Image (cartoon, rainbow, N blue to C red; front, side, top):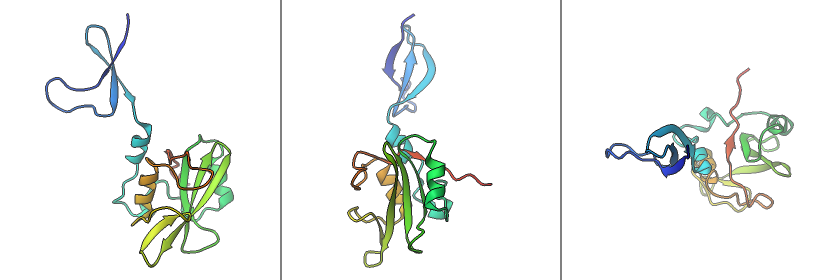
Length: 159
């Protein structure tokens, strides 16, 4: 038996499987095995910009840099979480697992713009969830992470 990969879709005109492929047998029978085509788009879908930061699963609150690294240590490249900044009370930190280790980037609120900025050079965002969603499909404007997106949110575990 050979398998053909065909774009998923519904010939009856109903819904379509946008962003997925389905495995098909030569006779056109679907095996029902969807394959994710766009990982980055999938991770953006995990960020609900309508939820406040405190209700986002990837927001870990007042954990330290060391605790963030312990959480990220065994995870894959592109895993991230947002936490409160240890050094500046009103700021936040984006902690990211990269191929070279860990990166901790400051998220500051610019009072003049009433917006959040990642590092020094990002465009301003109305909210941190909006920023996280943007950088889950766009590369980070941070030296050393220019090739990276936020791919894998690390959901806080309640103890």
